[in-house]
Length: 125
Picture 1: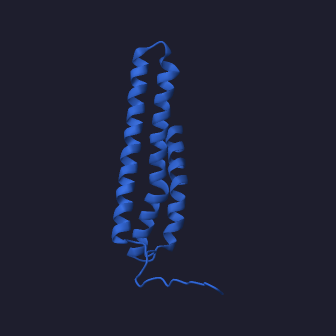
Picture 2 (picture 1 turned 180 degrees about the vertical axis):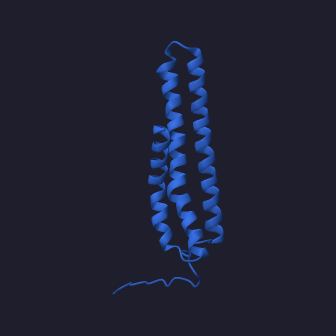
């Protein structure tokens, strides 16, 4: 019973910012922007943190706990490998998304919009 109450409290505490920000959503575009912000600002950093923790736990198992046990060393090496694979996949996908958004100029209009910049020469003045 105590676990259910603690779980309910944790879920409601984590959901409170979403409920509070739901009052500012007015149309479909705001919903899309809200979802993208949740993914970029919450989910992606948490996934990177999980991959880093998995890697560190593998290092701990390999070098600290695995001193006398070959089985613990193998489990630690496996966790380190999966942590690195997770990093590689996430960074690769992040890079591909940035390449696509930079190429298509999807969502950001910070590029040069035409024309040539004027050169200013102040020679002899």
